Length: 419
Image 1 (cartoon, rainbow, N blue to C red):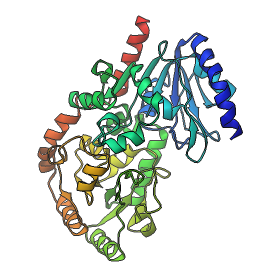
Image 2: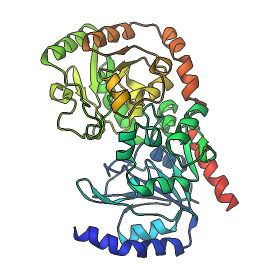
Image 3: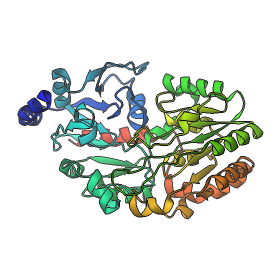
């Protein structure tokens, strides 16, 4: 409480300092995850990996909590600094380039424990602020969300103001750019960069070019698989505090028995990767059935980057999470376990697209149909999967290469050259 009160007293001084301190074009600010300070992953990490060996860029990684080893092998001219410290604030004030994963309000906020936080407002006019949004949204977000969800998720006024000041918001395709522009209003389409997502570089890069924490994950997954097929279950969270009746699926003992029998019969294992945001005591209960023989925990604490799972899985089961789009990037078969699809559309986040158009795989609503669909997908020839996914791939990907980070960096440098 004392720290929070002190912040509110000193925040106007910070804003004055931030406006007056000259910004350096060679100072680029990166952040760790806004809730999990020990994770420097996804688009921010992929872009960092692209520029890490460039001595003319001062790369500053801001984190919260205890100092963590992010395995930044080969990085030069970089510093890891705790956000909110005097040194961290002074360095941030000098950064002309600032990268986001969610928003300034989330990524650069100061947190006081639990759900309590304060927004550190940054000067925008003399900065190049780029939102490296963490995925291709299937769900309706922000201005495109259902009204009740929108009021809850965009209740911080600064988030709308900051979007006007973005130099760029990345997108994966032309269609994705239109969706992003609509969701991130009052940002406009000219601020959207159709570069592809930097994190997708990790899907197609040769293993010897991947950062060590991803190759470590690949080795760990191969040890778990022992030559078996990996079925991955990766559901998203539900807005349990907003839409009435939002429920997480709770497997019964009998269903788990059927699942284990299916895995044994198909020489397969199941990897369970829940969403990192556990916002309900009645969360998915599959973790209680992890046995490290047929069902394994592959959550973010164990496998930090989803790209490792996308590369190693043989079948992805999800619901409305955009992780299935990463599986499409690699031509992996997918299943939607949409046990609550009608409620999700009407009272949850909602869906941006017609699932029959953009989800090239079975969409099932009960456990029996899920097991049947898993058997069918594991037995489907790859050429059939490729044909089924062709339309969705055209919708979501303008590029299919390992040059997404390069395109983002080029856009940043072009803006800096004109300042």
